[in-house]
Length: 522
Image (cartoon, rainbow, N blue to C red; front, top):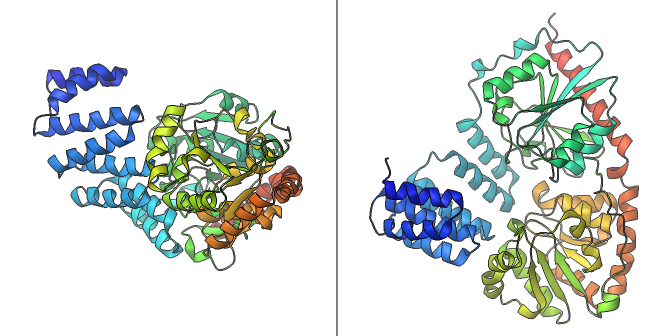
């Protein structure tokens, strides 16, 4: 559609961040009953979201839905906003409404699959959702994927391995991938890093460990595919899954003879051309193979972990000077579900001396309060003992053990790299092990099991509440666990760096041998 000059002017103000002028013009345009008015309503709500006025954004979007019932953009934004606020049920409800109006919304369909999968206790259901999405949007006709094009490829004693990710930067992936980039055997492996997003200062550090760094942001599928072909990559490894920066479109074309997905996405991808998933027997126990489209390749340990630099200080439990126990939530704000808040409210009510800090992804204290205020009120949180804090720098984050005694894991989606960081700083993390071995929900309990801190793992809500109350009322027990966190992590396979690197290299060599055996022409 064509937009009026007034709308284009308003949109320019919006794009430039001059929200006052944009709001004034959009308010006048909003009074109509056409597509331009619907877009104006959407942008007004978006301004509220930019200013962290979530309540006003929801009100504007719901009013716009009443007026423009069939506008799938408004329905989609409602879904995304409720998801940002941690209300999975409403997010799923509005996403389904939007898809009834516009069923072919590729991104929303994937988001909906992810939202449902994050709460599902049925691995087969999760697999089916992702396979369905891949069949519609990713998998290509079999006859268009020519595996025989690799017949000429030889390794001549050197295996070329390519890692594909948009997260070779200041991102959680850094703490898992850096050990492998630094310590791989350069005589046997030629490592390539394909960076699919803009680099930053951490990227510059990672580049020092990689002989072959490729900036691939904005590169078309065909050009990316040709690049991998020209380099003669033997094994291509996805580190993103269905997350931002992924390039599964290139894998779908069968860019390399052997294609592998690792820890960037813990659910199955559901795509046909991904050969293997690297895992271990704790994250993927025996009997779970049919939960994945990819063939499981179980290593002794899923990954290595390298702690943040300059974060080696140990801290005494703050209860010794405060006289009360402080808990903290350190996972992404989106993981703080209503279910988590309901249980944490019980912990606080059962223990009137304890307090809770929720570290958010918001940049300001005002933004953090706006994100959680209405949710705290909804669950009757004791407002004098709970605080929503803004995002922290890494150095500030790694000092949380100086102000909190232990951490409460989010649920149903558990922590990831934050669990490793917590253990390194000496901060126990209390989690619930799910009934089904779904890695996205069991990540923290799997780490704690591997590290040997089973006393931090509850089996259900009742035992979670019981352990939390016991720690709060007998904080000496917290101190005993804190003393073990880093030492147990250091002794775990996660920090046996050279062993993990050698295991990965042996895995790649075995994968290549299997490929050659299966593809040697007699």
